[in-house]
Amino acid sequence: MKSLIFFQMQKSMERNSDDVSFGEMFRTRAILKPTLLCLVLMFFQVATGIDAIIFFCYEIFQESGTNISPNLSSITIGVVQVVGMLGAAFVIDRLGRRLLLLVSEIAVIISLASLGLFFYLSKYDAELRTTLGWLPLGSLMLFAVGFSIGLGPVPWIYLEIMPTHVAGTELFCICN
Image 1 (cartoon, rainbow, N blue to C red):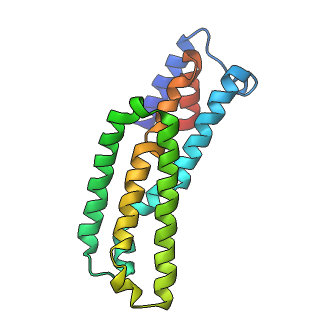
Image 2: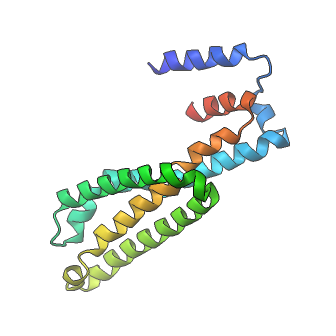
Image 3: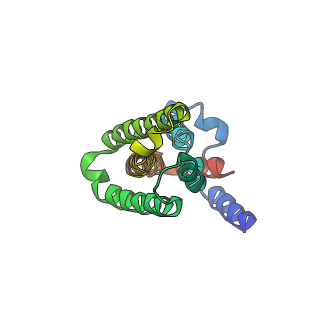
């Protein structure tokens, strides 16, 4: 399947007479700036750890030792993420990408810092797990909303700022 898509993308690129080479993308200033912006945003998207959080959500809640069910907590995080993505779809053009990215990054930093602090302090104080048992769920809900409104969709939207004859080349290079 991947080879078929790869072949179709390659044929599409060959048809356009004004395509640019991969090397030319980094030599032309008008192409370099949007390319680097897209790559940096994609890096930060992955660096948030969204994949690890989602894949190990159950284990995170189980390890927290709270009274809240890990299954229910994991489902709640999924629902919050879907609602956050839907909300972002409606406000992204009104509020702007820059504001959503900034709010998203602040929410992700606060949520991961509070989750890390919870696990660090609960290692030394077992009673903390019962008094602040809601903190892991609250932190990850904030993380899911924060990621969903900015760091999730905005890097993909920035691909539209690429010049038309370059966008296919860049996407082709990122995917392979």
